[in-house]
Length: 70
Image 1 (cartoon, rainbow, N blue to C red):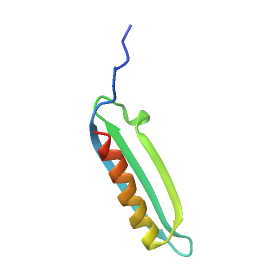
Image 2: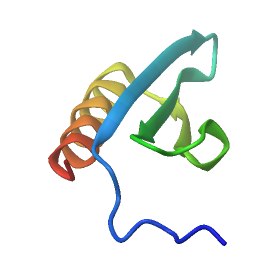
Image 3: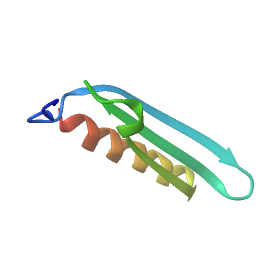
């Protein structure tokens, strides 16, 4: 029997993908995998219908939150 980890590992990788769709605006996908974590368990969130300033704000906040957990 494998024991679950006592704490989350540090971030191993983070991916931010932004696409612009006319007329809907920006779509953003954020994926962050921690050390020792499989991709299927990675943190994933999708945003849609964002303006340019909103997508920049969301990228800033997501990166700050995900990387400050390290």
